[in-house]
Image (cartoon, rainbow, N blue to C red; front, side, top):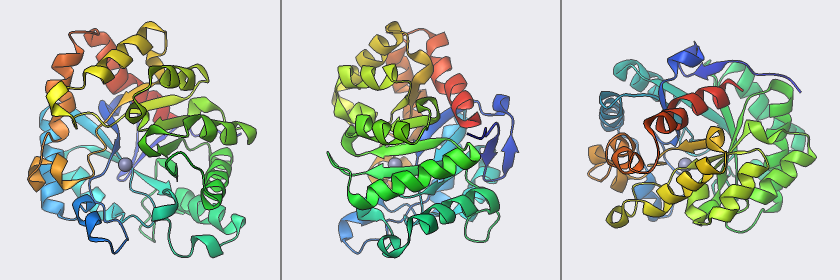
Length: 306
Ligand SMILES: [Zn+2]
């Protein structure tokens, strides 16, 4: 397998010490391509507001955002370039495919080779003719299920990883199917250390998170800040236990706040500042600042370097 050994942002490559505090799974500009009006809540298409939210993140010490909006989910990489420049942050964008519900209408008609080639070309040449290259590739699976089309997305993305070394970040619907995703990837000789399984905290199952880590994968706790009443106590407890179990280097924290109701700039709460303020205060009652920095800074730099 090929090595990646670079960190690719929408404004070019950076060194790992330029990464700083990183959120590994967010959405800044996103428009789900489905007619159902419920997706209006998940639409973030006001560049000024998204810039304001990112500036807020930067003002609390944030440096890098990994923007996980894939093909056919309203990705806007030129907009991300402008937001990064305006706020002095790094933004890493993604290629690859979402779970079947959000796959493009042409997906099922393409051959396996074509599905591979589309992502491969984006990685090498850039997205939609912009020259902006992704720094990570994605696939998604459904709730408690991997559909036949999702199996094809997994294979296409795994092949691109094996050809280029670019890291893989996945959508585990409500935290489910992480084991099955790893089974598929390992069968294709993808090493779990290059795989970041997202939304794992949503499964609210410590033993499951522990087992994913024991298999060597990275896991992302990225549904923090939702249940404001309990201040994410369960997640903090799980993170603490995973650290004690020896898996700190595989942990990431992000907000996946791709919804208006989570972002103050769009009228919601708690916003991108949450992990750097309220959650940090709560975490530091249970883990050391060194541990916090390892998760927020060191792990992301290591993972996205490939
Ligand atoms: Zn997401």
